[in-house]
Length: 219
Image (cartoon, rainbow, N blue to C red; front, side, top):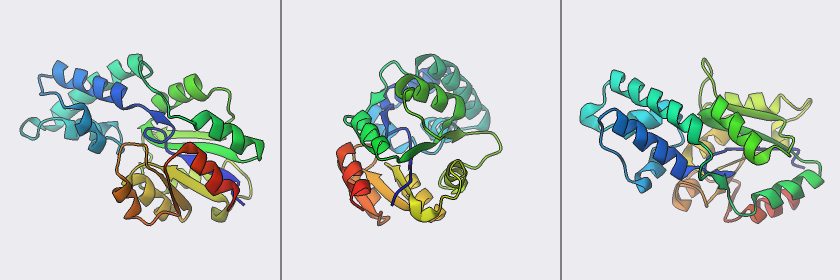
């Protein structure tokens, strides 16, 4: 029986794309770099803010100094605008309600910087008792390193890998679950394609939040 569901955040629980893209384009423009189309960000997100900024900068302008400048502009702007258009995906609240009624615990393991993850979780999921909210922190490896999953599991005494499911929307998430040795659920409504998720042979591929409930409650 599943005792803990660990969720990725961006592209899994919440649709953050417009706010992330808006903040990154603001940062690029402030630093004199060309901006990106919204659809380009689908392949740029998921590996932490520094990597987002690095690969958003045009290759011919991509120096470490420029990346640091864009990063600074991004964090300053995004911290003020991270919830302008961001919202949970359809059915997420109903899913959390249904799983919590069965005594299943939740955690978040994200490559979003820690403060941003905490603010969004408080604003959008404050009524839920997530046992752990983990984001990108200085000195800690980012996904697909499995450490963040292991850390999330440590919030529940005696839990085993067989008791855990990890849900995410990208190749990084699928690889994180594999590296951690837990079952993975690939959600198809996020930032990457069904084909990308399927290539990692997840335990389940789901097309709706309701399908997560079905997968977990009937396993």
